Length: 281
Image (tube, rainbow, N blue to C red; front, side, top):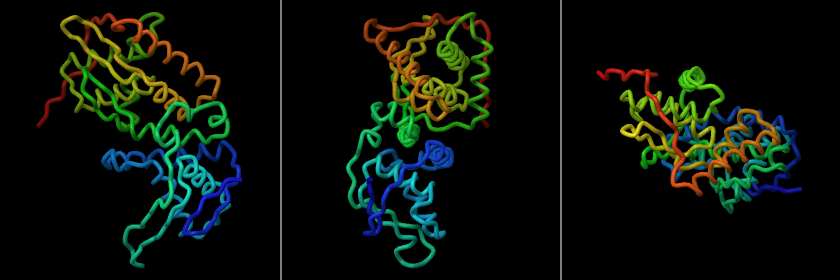
């Protein structure tokens, strides 16, 4: 059985149920918002399980507690072998200190799609890889990179509802969201507006990582897709492996289309606005 060394103490890792990994991911997800406020080069998903372990140990929780064990598995799967935890190095009420003394980044730490597979999805150990994707994903709009972040759920749902209402016949959701996104841009909204940010998040959830809106030619062009983004989103939304395989196949198909053609256009008809630009004071 694997182990991890914490404060020079070897702690054995015990197998846990998938539902416990999922519960920990649900608990950690809101903390990703805080993590997104840290510069990307210093933003490590391992800080979430490490902070959880530190807090629970301060509360007197034993190493074999299921949620503590899941946090330790997360650290192990991210490549952490040894770490040091101190509530406050000075002995007061200051900030805790977490130091990774020995670690070697794994596929999960690097954000590679290989980290979400049948085995890790079935066991639940893929959830930390999905959270890692959430805090590092970016979106290219008209060739400019933007961090996606996590938008307020009501705002994302509002844009999703707009796209759903605007779907044409058997049109796929991806295309409907892309048209809604383009309409917002053509109505004057920018990447600083919550509606556009929510649109980028929705597109990323479906695996789209780059898009261009060509207003003069009345169309949208998909420029990039990510299997990892789509599978991470699907996993966090509760999809099982069979459904995730289909998600992966669909995204791979879009990637192949982009590789075999210069572009993948969508005919855009802006016959009615979906949003109005807010007046800024």
